Length: 111
Image 1: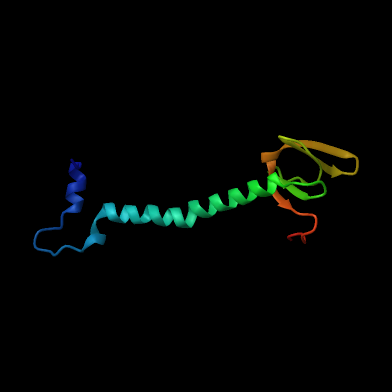
Image 2: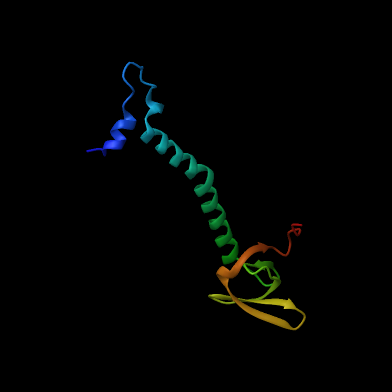
């Protein structure tokens, strides 16, 4: 059973022809959900999977940017963490999910 306000919205005013299937608010909301999925959710899922794949394939010498904005070079890769060389003689250990961007050592740097 539909709530009272939805039945009022779904009915056409007396004496006017119905606007077709697109005049139904439920259909419009469904179309908006589909649009949000294809415009927002799906591309973000694709980017997240690509980043997870790049993090899983980290190698020594790759340039990375952490979520804190630290630019570094991968010094060592462990199971759950990665050791980054931030400056000469300065090593920092981060969790792998803290890596926001991976620039491979053989690819040109993005500016």
